[in-house]
Each structure stands twice: as C-alpha cells, then as structure tokens.
Amino acid sequence: MYRIMLFPHDAEIGELRRALWAHRIGHRFTEEEEGQVLWLANPDQHDAMIQLLSRWQRGERLTTERRRKASGGNSLAVPFRQAPVTATALALSLLVFALMGVMGDIVVAALTIVPVGIVNGSVMFGSLGDAMASGQVWRLLSPAFLHFGWMHLIFNMLWLWYFGRQVEALQGSWRMLTILLVAGIGANLAQYATGTVLFGGMSGVDFALLGYVWLMSRRAPQSGFFVPQMLVVFMLGWMVFTMTDAAAAVGFGNVANEAHLGGLVVGLAMGWYYSGRARRL
Image 1 (cartoon, helix red, strand yellow):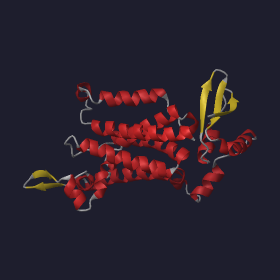
Image 2 (cartoon, rainbow, N blue to C red; image 1 turned 135 degrees about the horizontal axis):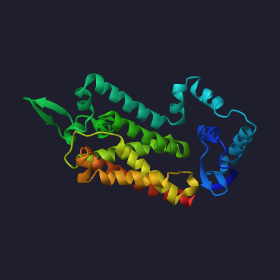
Image 3 (cartoon, helix red, strand yellow; image 1 turned 120 degrees about the horizontal axis):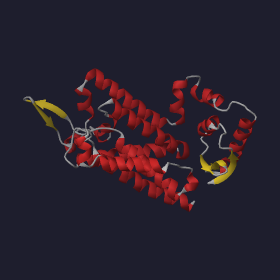
Image 4 (cartoon, rainbow, N blue to C red; image 1 turned 30 degrees about the horizontal axis):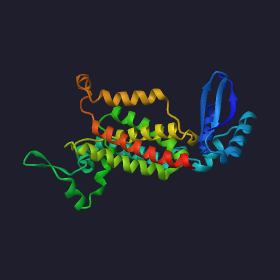
C-alpha cells in the first residue's frame, strides 16, 4: 500500500470514499494517532486518485456524474454496473425467496442439490449422480440461492455485498465469479457429503469470501483488501458457536455447518494461491 494523504479525524470523507469505489480505485483508510490516512493499492492509479482528491478539495461533486453515465440515468442499475456478479447473485437470491413465498415447496424442490418428490405420501430423494446424468447440473450451485427466513436472507446478503463488492472493485468480476462458483459448489458438496439434502443459503460463499479477503489483506496488503479483525473474529466465532450444542439450545441448531466450513476452506485456499501470486508481482 502507498500512503497518499493525511486527513483530520473529523474530516467528512464519505463522498470521497464512494467516488473512489465508483471509479474502481483500490484504496484503504486507516485511523492513526495523527488522523485518517488514505492509502493507494495500485500505483498505476495514482494520477486518477490525485485528480479525484483535487476535485474533492475544491468542493466539486464526485459521484453523480460517473454513476449517471454508468447507469444510463437509472439508479437501480448502479449496483449491476459497479459489481455485476455480486449484484446478480443478490438479486437472484431475492427473486428465489419471493418465489418461495408465492409458489412454496415447488421452488425448493427445483433447487435442492438432488431431486425431491412425494411417493406414496413419503418424501423421496434422488441421487446426485442421477441428477448430473440427466443434465440437472444447476443443482450443484442452486442451493446457495435458497433462504428459509428473512434473517437468514438479510445477513447472508449483507456479507455477500460487503465482501463481493470489494473483490470486484479490486480484482474484477471474473475473480468474483470464480469464487462464487467454486465456493458455492464446494460448500454444497461438503454439506451433501454429510447426508443432508434439504439445506440452502449463501453463507458458504460468504465464509469463502471472508477467508479470501482476509488472506489477501494479510499476505498481500498492497492489493488493497481490508477486513476488520473484529469482523473476522465474530464470523469465525459464530461458525464455531453454531457447531455446539449451545446453538441448538437457543434455536440455531438447524445450520449448514459443513457448508460454512467447506466454503471457508475454499476461500482460504484461493486466498493463499492468489495472494501468493500478488506477492510475486
């Protein structure tokens, strides 16, 4: 990371930060004793950052012009322009949740990792091998878009947007798509391997993004990634808590723990690989 400028502790830098993200300039603000320090991830973006800083210091508006051009005047399109993979995954999760509310279990049965049906009044499950042989390859990923309650949906979407937008801003949409596919499928297979069929949620991808962003920030700080240490502690602590009997006692017993762990392992593996590449550049 390259130190650019020191701001007073009480400086209002919200618009500047939004503009830097909108222009895909990798950066980080840190709180130091002397004030807020702005760091630049990629030195090739130095001139672009200085231009934005100059405009901000002159009191010009920074974010609206670029956002209007990117969205064609439609504010709803802005997230899809800034982070298309993350925004699409979020929108699909919301759509599936809405369809579940309207159509019920038929949506769940279409997206579970193996086919589900009712035979002679009993629930019957197909096999993953048969599903793949019949061309239902979407089932490897589709459980990630199933959410079984508002809290389940909201928390997963918050972490998806927080981490996913950072990945796309700093490393592009293809990297985010790769993480989503590998972690989503990996987490689903890890959960299925335990004999569970009826599960869902984006949390496996969220834990993969946590592991990825954390390792990138630790092993390749010049990459611009940042995650608060307390957030890492909280999410890992939560994962461990849901694996204990205490979680079941307070109503959190039906959690896809293996999907969380599987996603985290995938994210750490990818983070180790790509941070190693970044360190050699």
